Amino acid sequence: MARRLGHGSGPAAGAETGQAAGAETGQAAGPAWRAGGISLASVAAPLLVLPAAVLLFESLVARPLYVDRYVFYSEAGAALLAGAGMYRIGRWLGDRSGRRALVWVPAVVVCLCALLGQLGPQQRIRAPDSRLFDFGGPARYLGANARQGDGVLFFTAFYRKDRLGYPLDFRKVSDFALAEAPARAGTFRGRDKPFELTRPLMLSRRRIWVVGRLPSALLPPGPARQESMVLKRHFSLIGEQRFRGIVVTLWLRSGT
Image (tube, rainbow, N blue to C red; front, side, top):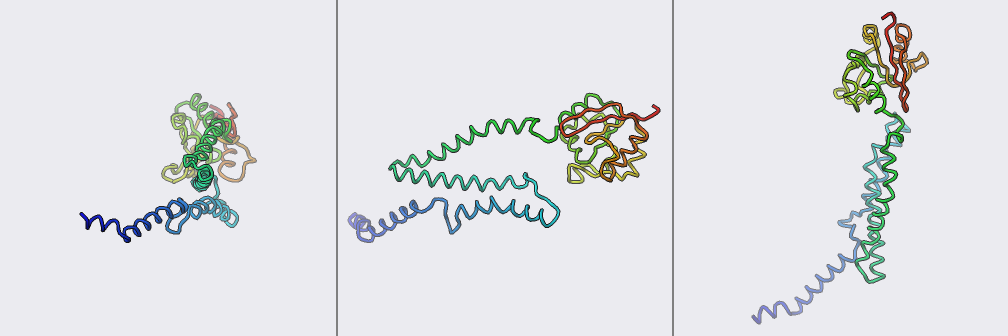
């Protein structure tokens, strides 16, 4: 018994206790977001800046690839930096007031303000009026007025995403200009047939819907302009409906 007490109460034990306390104190005193030579800032700052910077630089020297949704994930860097800042402010408040519970106050206040402040903008950005293109309106209009066997052309293939988003509204029509489906091509545009193959298919249709732009000889050179000339020469415009960023027209084969 005496040996055990002596072993735990001698100078060595006191030194060990002091070292442990010092280690605990040093760990508590050091930044909680730093470990092993890697700081939160050294991870969060590059995450916030580098993805957008690399894409912007690439877009200046080569084919532009920058799209905002490609760098949304980097906003996690801003959240990490803001969280670290709130933590440091909270520690300062706790040390000045002697109340460690105040460490959480800045973070709670900022989170509540961010939550309440974004409710209105989040609701507006999800409304159709906030979009450059209204894809739902054209899809519903075509779905309600199309007949079984009608054809559909997209001027240009960019507007094919309407069919991807609302496939049931396009169940009556045939996308006869499509050579390779978007799922197989790996893009929402898919791959169109050459005009030489599309032209005879157009002439075999009685009714053709055009989604996207109004057919015109003023369109940029390409299949859309060539198909426009076929429509104007061999078809008659019998319906037109405009939506935000999209025009839907219906063409009837002349002489039918």
